Image: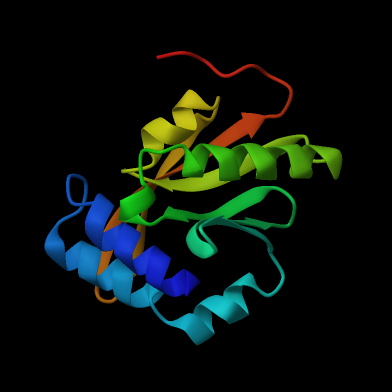
Length: 148
């Protein structure tokens, strides 16, 4: 179920930032439900639902790294991602986190910048024989977000 959300989000929302080959390779790596379950086993994972159906999820690793944040395209732009992020930030802070980090896709860069994350490094990562770009970003908790 969560892998379907990730796959649909990648294929439906990232086309302005990644070409078709990159999208397909990324979606294939995210679309394996068993592999995703293993990856999320030791993460704090929050799931947003609408009418009992999952529409998005966020996963926090080691109380500091936002490992995944995906919202189904049908729920995109409706505040689901913001609600998930706000909840995980509060939980991480309550558990003692001072800094949150994320390897943000090019599509998600603006989302995280609006929430006070600062770019630290540019990365290229292999997925299914192609390279995808992302940006490592950090946010010190307790600082207000910047407005752009």
